[in-house]
Length: 411
Image (cartoon, rainbow, N blue to C red; front, side):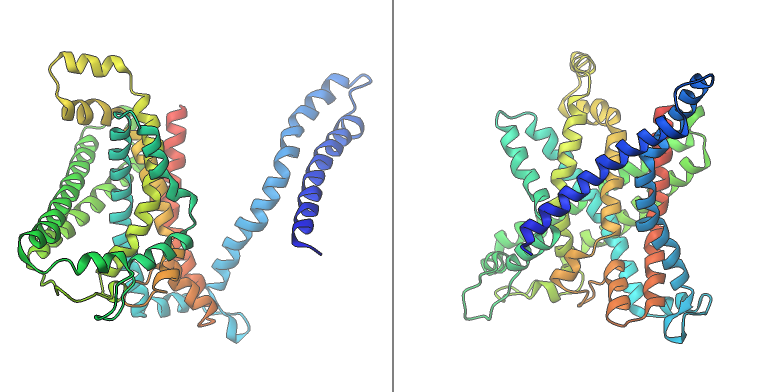
């Protein structure tokens, strides 16, 4: 059968099935189960209205149970069994084996690095783009260009950047943009400015941002209001402060490393095989994609800041930076946190970019790629399922915190 015709038939059957389910289930509820007639008509109508929402929720609950809840428990069971021994229960042996593998710790270290850099950089660039594009006449066009990478799949973006990072032999033309630019540097003032001063300034800004976020979070938790004195809120704040401290320490090391690194001028570089640098270049792909998402959300939040507060601050003598950091930032702090946590969830599950560009080689392994290799290449379902459980445990606190935060705002 023609694939297009098969797709149309599938859509027709799916839509017709949904319509038929809701129509006939309501008819059964109102005409057979709780008919609105006789002496019990009022009670039956009330019961039918109580049952009706569950009829609407039933298909979604079945789908979630089949494709979400069941796989979670099945994965947990597989992580405690040995498939090669007839699914025999082995307890925590798979976890011990996983923890003894260097590739797992490499993946953990890289995931931590991704968690520190990508959400922070994406949110910062998105906030900067949102603020600047709102102040220029052609801001909507600029937003469209910045948001455009969101329409590209992770694999498509990986192919694009793989061409940008491409390396050819020394005596041939470089088709990779990065190497073509790199070969223009041969020392001197230009190389110092581009390769040392600018990266050092960016790292310093990154460290200062983390220090500011960590300081304000710690200060706020030391003097919490009555509704903020919760255990979950304290744990969340402690995690934020810990991430900021670790990121700041790593940033300070990177700052001094920029000035001491010996650059191999005049030689095309195999960017994706250079440890540490290759992970950073892979992160650039996700930052490029997620910046547009952060910009759109934060731009809407900035437009929601009341003009009266901004005008009052300007009348009181506040400059542009004071208005932004003292007036706007506190009022959109909730949105910034939502954007940050959403990108963090994406980072924890990152797989496509690493798989398409390096396949976890050259010390670029991440947890999702490690899980894939254990499941489908090593055919070790126990260790692969254990890695999946680790990813789920890392994602769960962020999801729980988001749900708690939403409920707090609703109250």
